[in-house]
Length: 216
Length: 216
Image 1 (cartoon, each protein chain N blue to C red):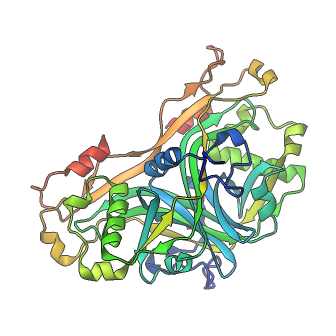
Image 2 (cartoon, each protein chain N blue to C red):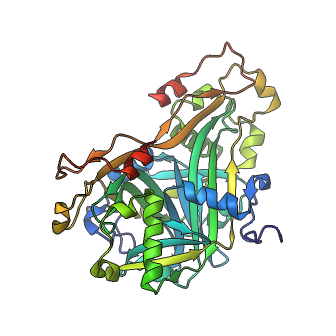
Image 3 (cartoon, chains in turn cyan, brown):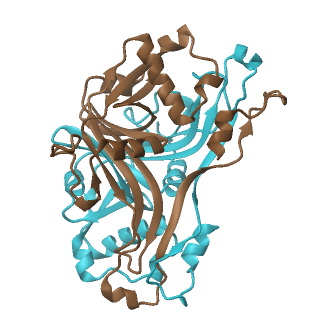
């Protein structure tokens, strides 16, 4: 596993192993393409999965929330799992059994750490903002001291995990290819539609570059 | 909490409580609108979140996988968390701090049970298939005995959980409304694009109703 530093016994793909990817670039690409992740953690012996925004800077994912957030205080310095899933298509086979989805997913294991310095907190918040919509950070009012104080930023190391990708056509049983049943892929993707300006926005404020680029 | 049978101390929404919903219909609507869920569970003391398909029949969600699936054998009769998240929009405020997303999410806690009877297994598989794409089940070859034997079906009770919904416009600090910064919502949704027929499909097999209806 020397060439796959992220691969460990507990993160290698067991079901359909050929779909597993372990190189950092493949994992970064999927992380950078998704909008949100689900964070799994234990609280009083119960596993929870909660959706949360994130952003990446090099080998870390940054998370943020209120300093009072139960989830964030629970996961600091405790083992958690961060999962990202992109749905790319419905795979419609001739048999019910071979129906599937095309997807790209990443599962990371790690111990999130609280970011202490103001400088790295800002870096983390910018990474989250830029992940949500690139270029927006420089267009808006930066966080003030009160907002910074009310916000916790955590960093999740990208050091143990795997990606799993299905990006194929239909796979049917040999005999089923003779059946008079339509089979194929329906591609799906998260798409944006026309931005809706805030009701209180002055009519003379144009749509900014971040939004224009997001709509491309 | 009598009118909110799904609400418990551990599933009530803590952050922004007004966004919490606990009635079965609101929860069913979100579950029925999403494509996949993330399942959180413990394995050897580590929390994992894994994406998986599901389908609903009344007060149960059905899950399926290979009988050899580690995840499924781990969660049978053990406490798990099933989370569904739909992303509806990017909320672009005048300040970085008030950026957000519009979303609908459901978090359910429960102990999945293995479905034993063939009849209920088929019901569960049909629910999953119909959830993926309505009307498809009756168009395709049904599972045969070998496929049924290779497949485990689990049922997850919808009895403890909550929904959380943000469906609002931009909320900015009072002073920030004076800033010369664009603010608004970018709606996003998972959209389908033109179906791609399987390469081996005869040209005389038309697109079926399930696919036509899915594209509407």
